[in-house]
Image 1 (cartoon, rainbow, N blue to C red):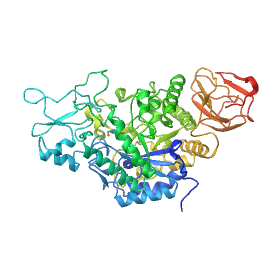
Image 2 (cartoon, rainbow, N blue to C red; image 1 turned 180 degrees about the vertical axis):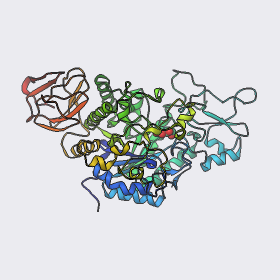
Image 3 (cartoon, rainbow, N blue to C red; image 1 turned 90 degrees about the horizontal axis):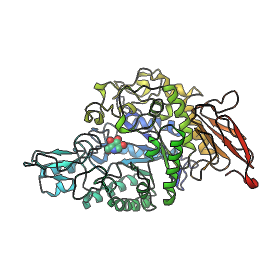
Image 4 (cartoon, helix red, strand yellow; image 1 turned 120 degrees about the vertical axis):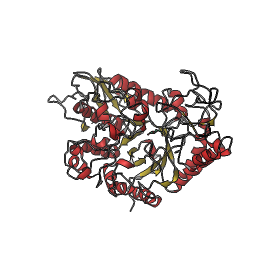
Length: 561
Ligand code: NOJ
């Protein structure tokens, strides 16, 4: 029986909480060491109880898994390691029964080198129509021994690989991920058909991988740092592609979330025009250090850039590509940058966890939708993976200096005492789980009202049921240095203390939730957040300072926003 009260149909995506499942590491239903769809189906009640609105699955299609499934060999087949298409269909239907929508991940920039198109292109040889679906070129240099251009890779190393007949092909990621030629009609037609294929199966949305990279400068001209436009990032042609996608999504009431890493906020917002993508990931927020002024600027910029196009913001603290939140916030450099990831960075996990709790409450109080990456609700730290077990190609391609992304992809701990912490594997899981992870296990955290899981559970419940959360306006309150304070309507206030001192709270009628205990004087300790409800619709404005709370009458006695 469906849970219709949970399945809102009106623009649900504008303020949804979307949980990211990395199927390989969520739950292992058949015990072979790799997570799968049977594992996810068995754990759907956990997601329903947590109270998420939708689940985004990273790629589950047929794949040699060179890049964790972002090397797709066939979009219409589920990889046998994960299950079958029939199981995916059942999963989509069962999730919906529980009030959870499903979002799939489409990777349009490239395919696997095992994809039928690429194999045919290799066989057909230079000048063939099969090669036109990719970017094949003769090389430079006297004997074509040099790559056709100098484009930088998204993954360090070469962007071109030479095949036996002497031609080179382009791959912005690994050689096993050849880039498609988006100037070719058949490439566009195929992806439109793939979208329909998944919408027909009941998915509510599609996450678009590397969404700003598909279109390439037709001349494949050399790249020069700082030259605008970039030959393969954010080319204008992309907007035409996404307009045609939007028309398809509209037929099914489907929504898009684009993976768009673009520092230029005006260019970013173009993807969110009303006839293009519904939403895009807010990576500026994810990369932002734990500092009040930086966060406030990022929040303001985000809201300002989305407003003119009418799109809701998204808020993301981590995903399967970046350092886990509690680890990042426990380091000296609390921002995120692919370029500076390093082994053995000193980390204070206690501090990081306190901040991650506060950050969760900040994020969930902001207007828009929120992405939650599996294990974030458990406060999992980044795991140290022994070098000989690292599988992520980013590690090898960096010459071994980049630790890669496996540290945030470790199989989840469900039961403290069970083998593989209840992940389900009877043999060793595909990535090793750290020795001390029983304390993060779901069953332990369920029994502990002070756990990260308990905090997320309650925060999501409040966000779902109490007034003022989700889409809508945000108004900053005056606050002391290092303190963020804002209202969200219906008297809802969020205060986050990132200063070194306890902060006095404004007068409030109700304390809804706090990420940690207040001190003996009722002040908000450092690295702590609180949700408050203002006293009976007020005639007061509130200033939150490092040590004092100043209550000031508002001119004309206007109520708080
Ligand atoms: C972004 C994905 O999130 C990442 O995991 C992948 O390696 C690249 N795109 C290439 O598909």
